[in-house]
Image (cartoon, rainbow, N blue to C red; front, side, top):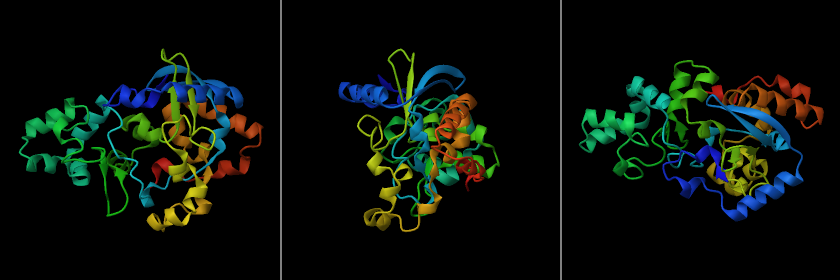
Length: 284
């Protein structure tokens, strides 16, 4: 089995392969919990999916603007053509945020070499610069001395682009993080869940270090030492709403509606929560 969202990771199987122990934990979990079968559409391709749907009622608060955790710690994917074209079309804005082009110029790369890297290199910079001169994800930037944000997402917001455009331009794994999708080897079935107390043994992310989906962690003194202003308790809402627009455009309208309706039927979420107006993906 594979961590589906990381299949195109620059480090390959080292990252995306699920080891046998975790595979067994996943199978046991999906036998034990209630699931629904649905269809997801990812980058225009349809897949059969089995969803650990109750996980999408878990509380979440994706407060990237005040978080100190380095989620953008590396390049999560070999960038798609759409992303590369967007960076080239917005090279000045991209460079103002990331400083990547300036860094490469300081290291004696020519403009032609920089353009070639954006068009053809896995991480859009020369291989020798990854994790050296340019650390963290090459699309990350720091608007201050605290948060680490996505330059792609930020440029989209600056241009008043909508949720669909943002999802199309960003790597899919970045849009969906920390939702986990694990696939059979032949991709005949995708298993979709969220890191929590029950899944953290096999998901690629550790729930206990992920405050966005761990409200209790966000209230601890140790976490508050790093994040004194972020992750307010009353800003946690069911994940299906916190990521509503993202889910629609990343996994398809059918996935979103099927999960939402099942959660409503089982009173895991409530109609009044549908009135949540703020869309996380469009926060500035």
